[in-house]
Amino acid sequence: MIAPMNQPPQPMPIAADAANDTDSHAADTAHSPPHTHGATTRIWHWVNLVALVVLFMSGLMIFNAHPDLYWGEAGNRDEPSWLAIGNANEQGYLRIGGLEVETTGVLGRYRNDEGSFSNRAIPPWATIPSDYSLADARRWHFFFAWIFAFGLLFFMVLSLINGHVRKAIAMRGRQWHPRVLWRTVVDHARLKFHTEAGEVYNPLQKLSYIAVIFVALPLMIITGLAMSPGVDAALHWPSMLFGGRQSARSIHFISAFALFGFLIMHVALVLIHKPLTLLRGMTIGGGK
Amino acid sequence: MTDDTSGASSPLILSRRALVGSLAIASGGLLSGCDVLNANQGWRDTLRLAETGNMVVQRALLGRDGLAREYSPRDIGRSVPSNGTRSPSDAEYVAQASTGFADWTLAIDGLVEKPTRFALGQIRAMPRQTQITRHDCVEGWSAIGKWSGVNLGYLLDRVKVRDSARYLVFHCADTLRSGPYYESIDMIDARHPQSMMAWALNDELLPIGNGAPLRLRVERQLGYKHAKYVRRIEAVADYRLVYGGGGGYWEDSAGYEWYAGI
Image (cartoon, rainbow over all chains, first blue to last red; front, side):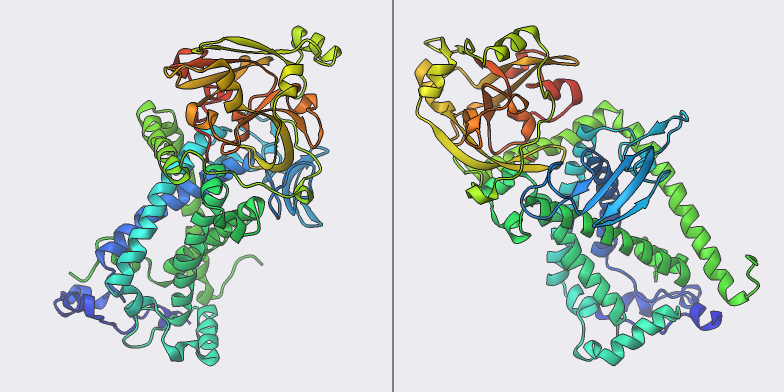
């Protein structure tokens, strides 16, 4: 089980990186990265990581101000919420729909550093800033939102122009075949990572990158804009697209956690697969 | 047995440990680093640049008269929850409330040609404007309600606001922990067609929780801008010269942004 996992997959030169692969040193050949990422991808990847982590953690602090989610245009303490984090009878809870679980110690109620109980929804270790400050969290959030939004726009446009999307990320016709998809899923579950010759990514990787880059990340921006009363007055479509401001807020939250799930999977797969080689491929570039 | 002797899975377990461990370390390091940054004035000023960007972009998108969305009567919710001051305990306000605000007046002064003190009855007799709009709180919740009152621009025309007036400061009758509540808006929002001094909510006189007897509606901004219990409107050249200089109670005491369009 271990052996095939640790074997380097066949090198897959693609046009943009052919030069790197042809004049690689002997030492590098043994650990030849499966793919040398272009500079645009590498820069964006890390800038985006920083932005998303700050956005996620400052967003969790903002959520502390009203840890309830609703569907529709309006929603407040007098309306039913579909998700709530809170505390009652000295116990923290998370409620989703009609399902309530006790979360004392993690969400809704926990001991703080002084040993007394705190009733904040999200604990300090997960938020920026760690203290309760809606004003500060909003400043962090909106500053990094600009970096995130322009970074994504820059990466999307450049990747479409320079062919990165077409060459590396776009699904080939045969890859949509259910049998091919199923085999990739099974291979992943067995920790066998295999990429076809001439391809940078396997179909499952491609689908997750498409889902992240072209669906989840843009969704964060549009749902974020939909929550702004100023933007909503100027452009009605973002909030109407999602069925109202509170729906947009809910989708913002769900999409944020989907991205967090992606981050965990992504890091786990890198660690399980070939951490140093992959890390080199995404930082200094490798190959040269 | 928790001790897994199967060689095949040990790299995975190591990886999991490494993953959880590195996440915890990353989170700890990141957090203390962020808290240090958060206390740094230079960094705070940098973050605020984005807020200036938000206002510039929003104003460009909105134009002067871009309207907040209006809703139909069936969209009106169970309530418009009361936040901040729910019932002022200030002696003067309590006395006014006990008589049904019979003697309440709204003074408009400062950089105006005809400083005037309007009786509540006069204001209620002025041309009535009604709109069903969504109130968005900075905390994240929203409520749709039907607001009626007098257009703010109409009042400004009555007192003839001078050209030197750049902002309106709304002085309120409620005192919170660190002082009296107040807010300020610029003349773009003051002259916006939906801006009004509201005295009714959902076809009834404004309840105390929602700012009786008079409150501001400035529909394109967050709830804390919508000053409640307003008793004086002052036209000024610069809001930075009044109270704490932030342009509002929460701006001064909690660091909220003066422009609350996002």
